[in-house]
Image (cartoon, rainbow, N blue to C red; front, side, top):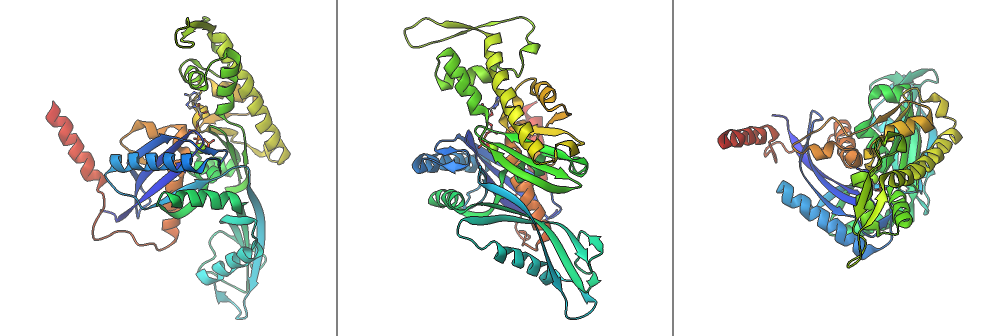
Length: 413
Ligand SMILES: Nc1ncnc2c1ncn2[C@@H]1O[C@H](COP(=O)(O)OP(=O)(O)OP(=O)(O)O)[C@@H](O)[C@H]1O
Ligand SMILES: [Mg+2]
């Protein structure tokens, strides 16, 4: 049995807060052993707008996760995002005084240290320094230089930063709930980790996670991250449009969107009518489903057009051989792939988190791409560092649990 360790991912979104307990083993497998969720309050576009509401929603989600998994949590991986994230390319080098030196971890770390000191600022905080490639003696391109011999090492990195005040506020809120932060993962990177296939990253792909109030973009080409951006557009705009058009509450509008919504009127075969309770003591009102879908289509069209412009501005649009992968809650809208293909004029796939095991089918849905991606990001980090797994006492034995469950099912029959 492989050694393993439990990590908890806390995805603080603007619609929901998910707490996902993952058992990560040393072979890189992830077993989700429980999860909790709450409606998000006090968080919008990745920013804390009401601290006490935010703290309450986080606590509610964490408690639900603890009850479901049977484990208590005191430290979490947390996502971070919003409009103030930025990705920049950086290059650094070191020349060795000793000729033909064997490159070790310290040499790579000193390149990272150089970048760290370059970004010393009160207004920005570094979230990730991701190596793209290394160049040995100005000629050979290598992806892992450790153990090779050379006179000079150059490293190319993607540096992801966030506005320090945004980072500090999220950190403060999490810590106010009594939780410690193990690490932070930027939204688009987390979603891309759980949803994209290596060949898509190689050929060129844009991952777009459309949530409640943010559209997170990550573009990959030749296997490396080329662009990362977060735009304040999301599903709550669609809900607001529905509420405004039919003069109903946002809660009712959200429920209509989820139960009767579609991305395009092209797919309505017979126009239905929907009777909805208006206000207490007043008669039901009747709306045409075509009008509801039209409202969704207009707003989604606008969102996709803005996202296309953003990708075109980056100069990467024509390099997306694998097209677009849509994820996040909004990707659940029926026929969204068809509408997106019409506007992007590229292949579109709906991306769901993959490469993990879980009893609940629910977590294999687009809205969990970020939370699952955070666990996978951590798992990749564990492979590279020598973090201790729990060897003597296995906190959780997934196979044993499956066997017990199968036993229980057998007993029932
Ligand atoms: N079946 C569905 N049809 C249409 N929209 C849906 C469906 N399911 C969820 N959504 C929408 O997805 C959005 C929430 O997505 P998600 O859970 O990914 O957001 P979040 O992570 O909380 O927010 P953000 O990432 O923007 O901070 C909401 O606007 C919700 O209405
Ligand atoms: Mg999200």
